[in-house]
Length: 205
Length: 87
Image (tube, rainbow over all chains, first blue to last red):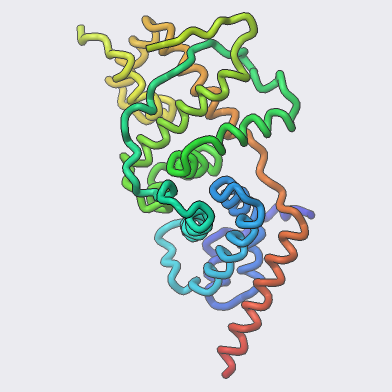
């Protein structure tokens, strides 16, 4: 697909879409569908659900476009819709209460660092692209949904702390504390794969 | 001289430190801790690499059949809206 060298300003595209220009809305869909699909897969961990979430997100966005105030970025707005849809799917699948974004998870135990070992300077080069992807994906998938979602928005989708808080309806301190725990847990998990050969990992604390 | 941070206190600030979101005073305290604590130095270095590796993940290219189904659903929705407007 040819990529236009002149990417139109998002605010212009959004306002064209708001007055009913279907081409403008399709342009917004093309801009963000890959990210929304990835986000949906990360949260739901299910390909079929992710596809549903993708469709529902853009259909809802289209339907409620007049409610988009323009105070936040369009992307933050659709991320919020997508996260809500994805969490609903997840709750449906796992008919328990482990999925709530509001549950109290701050036990303080999760910042414990289990394994300390130095990594190679570029540890990822030890693996093929496919191997690396599967290591990264399975590490993320093993996080609790409340941590996983914050990590994905902040460190994979690169939203700011404030945007993440807005998208998830969380306070800024809650986003920060979950992000810290997610990062430390991932670091722990990846150490298994990336630690310098010959280094003995030693227990800590 | 202010007392050295404990490892626990250091870890609490790690995320903000890596995001370069701490003021100069805190930064200095954290860097003094890392300089003297090899464990926290390793944790800082490997957490930083963790974040870098994830940031470098390639975006998904959306499977074409998924995109076609999305676009078809949207077109139906748009057509519906047009009909509603006209009636």
